[in-house]
Image (tube, rainbow, N blue to C red):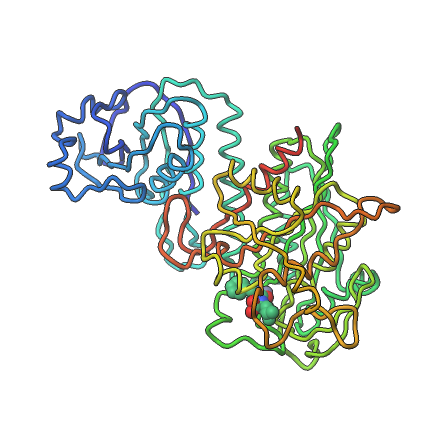
Length: 491
Ligand code: BES
Ligand code: ZN
Ligand code: ZN
């Protein structure tokens, strides 16, 4: 795993063969670094840049020789104040310069927000997953120094550290293959990750799940020799007024169950626990940052396998809130485990529930790999949209059309989990099903709890090349959106 230390300095560095200096392609004068003036190196005439093949693009880094064997890296320019672009540039630097022991960011920044965005991008982007490489590339410990006269608050650097760790820990957990990560070992990982954070952890094993009426988790998990778990994590700071509940889909592997997936669609289904990994690392970060919001996270963990003991298409299960579901497709398992999680979350009457799930292939078809589908109550959707915008993560509001409601009708149970032979609006149907398990605001109220659903089937896994601070593979996206929601709710 790539390790780094972030520093801030005003003095010019002593460069050597282990150093790289990132400078912006359109800036003529580099004020703080040893490269006093880029013009002196003949680097800023359009003609010279064109000859080098240098592009003014946020992902195109161009390396040219610098003083004392160092490397100067020309990075894309950005408009002042565009924090997303600055975060992206920082990410490209962190992602692409892993072999250097020292990286200097010699980039003019206007204020602390810009500096934070650059460092956040760098820290989140500086990542590699080599736990399973027998000959791991020896990752060098890197010191990244921001050259600036701006005064950064210590809390700013702490926040960068907490956020980037949360994103990296999410990617690590998501990348772990399913022969090693299953419900029980997921719990082991939870216990490791929460160390030192002020959280209480409660684990419901298969016996408690059966006794507690969690028919979704039990029904999905029973095809596997590795039984399901429900993990509840609670962070309750004194003086918090707002109660936020997070619910995550944690299918450690999704074969589809007896409604078996074709081979090509099954590959990558270790990613099906990304929702749970995302909310887990978000609540840990929220606790580390001491955000004044009461947050509870519910991880719905199961392995979806076909076997002689698996739930059959046509079986009826009973979920925690008492509703019965005819399982018309065992591959629509995420909504079944979330039904239990959402029911349990509702019992505590939180002010807002946000669930995160790699719920439908339809999400990826509709929105691709960079936008999450966002559905739910208008007010909850507004809260999530605003936080995502602040965090620089992409969500797109999708509707929940009434016309789909009747498609949930089952001949024999309260609901069916899938509309067989009808793929229209699959992502929307998933959200409509989940809504059935959102409880009331209070025991006597007839208003339902504010709720938003993030379908992250596409963006959980970047199956293309890396860009900005996103590597190929597990993205770690939406952890920062959730942290930001908790921060906004504290106000
Ligand atoms: N885990 C999948 C969704 C998924 C697909 C995530 C591709 C990431 C990439 C989910 O459990 C699933 O299989 N959903 C079915 C639902 C259908 C049977 C109603 C789907 O999308 O095909
Ligand atoms: Zn499935
Ligand atoms: Zn799934």
